Length: 459
Ligand SMILES: *Cc1c(COP(=O)(O)O)cnc(C)c1O
Image 1 (tube, helix red, strand yellow):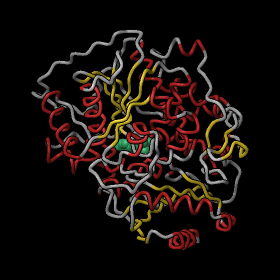
Image 2 (image 1 turned 135 degrees about the vertical axis):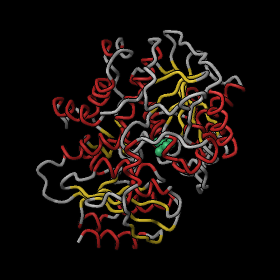
Image 3 (image 1 turned 90 degrees about the vertical axis):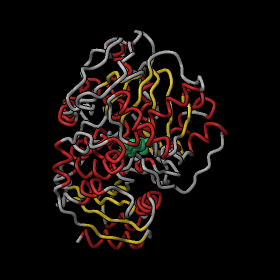
Image 4 (image 1 turned 45 degrees about the vertical axis):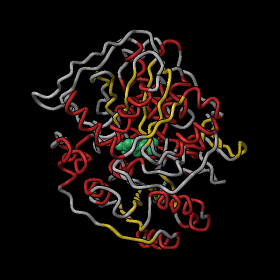
């Protein structure tokens, strides 16, 4: 499989170089030359396949030239050691993507990426420096994925004061090969700085550099797997057992019975709480590969660049605004370039319906779903929940099962959740993270300050 830059089809690379460089030399994002299809035998067993096997089949055609199947098997087995249950809640389904070590969906991409990098860099003796800009969750997932991986060091840039104390501990509490830079600016500033450093050829001569944002194709591809797994389940009329880890009110909660049975053989509608649109782009790949998906909902907070684009056909990046769903505070979503390189506006409008949700609606939804269904939502997942409600009220949802991607565990955002509905149950990985001490350097949102900090940490 070849990859080309979103800015020029002449700039081609194989998987290894697309993944390790992060950004194409012309500043574009790498996209696969074609989106492969699942084989007929895989398609007919989506509903019953194990997640790790779906992940293997999903990733294989994209990496085959550079990662042998036996290695890929080891990678998928060791990366995806947690579940992603697709369960019935009230009048819909939730796909819980937060059972990994940092309690957000980004663990899927980051854990695959770290293992793939470690394999692709075998035998190299030059240290690889990975830069990652985060609005909150990416940094923790990437730090955790790469922690203690030999030959690779990670620097996480995050907007100072705009991540939660837990997120800050997940980013800056590991130490060793992981360092943290608090940038005096927004997430968009962090992202701009990373892109500028990666485009600085003089600097790259000194240091092997890569990025681990969803601009990196190796993080995006594995995310397609959980769309296929969920859509396959729904199509086969199945849901997963309601696991202990599922954040329900322990007793007495939940006034509404689950009025939710899946009609078999209908493709699913999936609502994706979105910011930088890596997650939704991965969903588009899954659909093109043959996952039985009818429709996507792009649910954003008031940073509604993409819903506005879907409505008007005009893409207008803007400054991001702070909200209570901070991992989605993105005014200039990087992956728009990818979406636009695969699909025209008309095609996108056929597949994706946009909607946005403000902070008051998000809070009301957390309270209502807790009271009525006995289920804890984090603010991002609540944006998804409310987005589906709004579009249902406007009759914009296709027939068939409808599900929400729950992108983070409610305990990860307990500053927001707890005052509204009391404390959600806390997974043990988050308890351990809160006990860490942190080590941070603060820099202005300026490329020379970043380069200086990187040179220091390099010595
Ligand atoms: C990163 C993140 C999102 C947004 O995902 P994108 O791929 O950037 O659209 C949504 N929710 C949570 C909890 C996240 O961490």
